[in-house]
Image 1 (tube, rainbow, N blue to C red):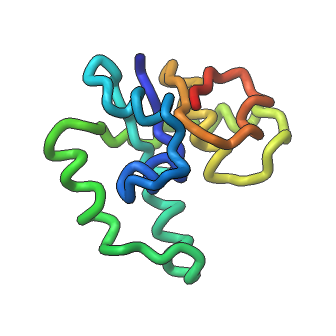
Image 2 (cartoon, rainbow, N blue to C red):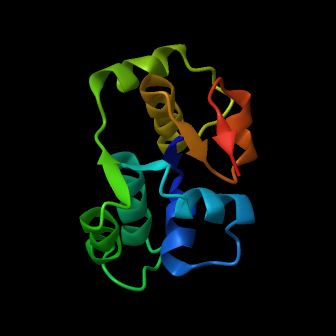
Length: 128
């Protein structure tokens, strides 16, 4: 399965948080799954850290690099087609970062690994 990690999911994975569902843990651990992390999530984390809303235990690149270098995740760039999809996305959810993740998942044919129930208002597969 091709999965796109939601920002919260990524943070819970890197901290081994109890909030991570057993389904999410199994999906993350399954080597058959292709795990993707959007640059949009990196942007969101850095914005929230800078605003003092999200303290990180270490710099973001130090959290992400081991996952990238071991091939656990692939970073998904933001492409033009995903941005243009925003025009047709219903206004069910106001968070701009989440809306962009939804657009990327639709464009790339990805299932979003997320606890956010607001995502269910969109035509994108979800797993939690």
